[in-house]
Length: 622
Image (cartoon, rainbow, N blue to C red):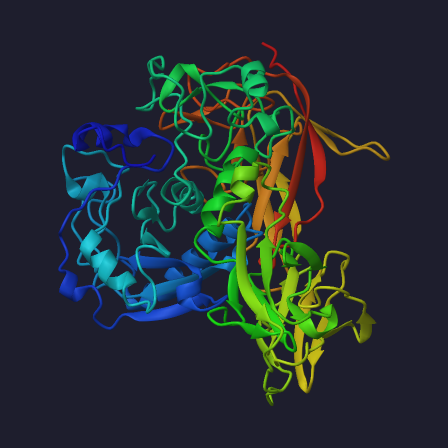
């Protein structure tokens, strides 16, 4: 849940019984002057200069010096879950991640799990119950905002405009908060799923899709006009299509979060009178992905934190027609950006990042040269978003044919490039930018396992999408400079373990089928031959992929399926065959045979092919 400014704090705190992301308050149990003592900034992921990137700053509270390895493991788990979700997976290269390690004197956070629990001596003063307030609710995990800001300011070059603060409390109790800062308990089963939901609020300005305000009771009917929210409407699908409003371009497509994009009643804390695009998405139920509508919004939000044109030939004075001009761009992991060059409005080149003007035969006089960089991602269909500065940037020069450019002695060598110290995934696009001599274009020569790979046009990016299975070595050469990457093309392996069935049916060429007459459990274990946390997922009967986290009350417990679902803190988990998120949802058991698919995503971003088994649920006799 995001901060609801129009409601008093007490009422907003009462709403903390929502899906895991709740209102933040500003208690002051810690001294800001103590927050940064002996603190260390640890770079987790560096993709470029701090001032030119979106920076995720992860703080830890209640971790002692001896527990710093636990904090690092929690950070890795939270970030790897984030990288398993689009559009963060494709735009990971836009984001720097920093951890601030500031050991606390005592382990844990305040009032955990109850108001009678002791207060801890920690750096950020994190505490449940809204900072130990009897008027709050247990799940509201707050942070001293002044202390958090002071720690985040240790990351040089970050500001409130280019960073997102995520504070992890050393606790296994379910809880978190949203708003300017996102908080989560570091060790709870669901905590790593709170982070992307909260970023959806704070960065993307997405709204909650819950059909309730306080858990356990459906919300009142929506009474307003057409919401400003990009993913809520009072219109029917037919009206959306006819009027070309909101998500009309996505109507009828299979949702990334399950079902088809359409109109599903309930959202913005109302059970009736307002509709959302998907049956369940991240903004409604933790564990699912953003649907296409939310993903499009998040692409704009993430891209809006950077400039697609990172560097270019100076444009403040005219340039000669006897030289080379350049643009350096961002490099999404999911696909290279497009560059179009125009001279006096007419296209003269496409794709290349450097343009030798001598080849254009430009005559005397002055001319206008432009380079337009556009992100053509299929994640975006709205031309207004595509044309915004988040996804389209241009730079223009005056070319004067009477000027003479003095040659320089710039050698061809690499400047910025995809990190080479960790394996890259086989789904990635890697890049290698070069220096920019004024009278030439350095060529980048790519090889895979020693064999030359043709890469005409934009030779600064190489798509690894065709590589399979075994590890590969990729090199890029320009001049005397050489870069080498190891490509991890082998996806993680996932195994499953089920509770004892009534019987097991195995037939040649068919998935193994397990028969149950009541609840059963499933434990997924992902394993990879490379370092890094593995994220496992499953889906039932082709519904949306759901991140496996164990069980809401215990990360080490298996997931539990039942005919009607299990109520945990007024939410429903594990209804087989037809997801049910709230107690007033349809409890009708779906007996019969169901297909459960499972897979894992490794730290390099490789997505394993889905495997499956079947479960037949029969009604218990007697």
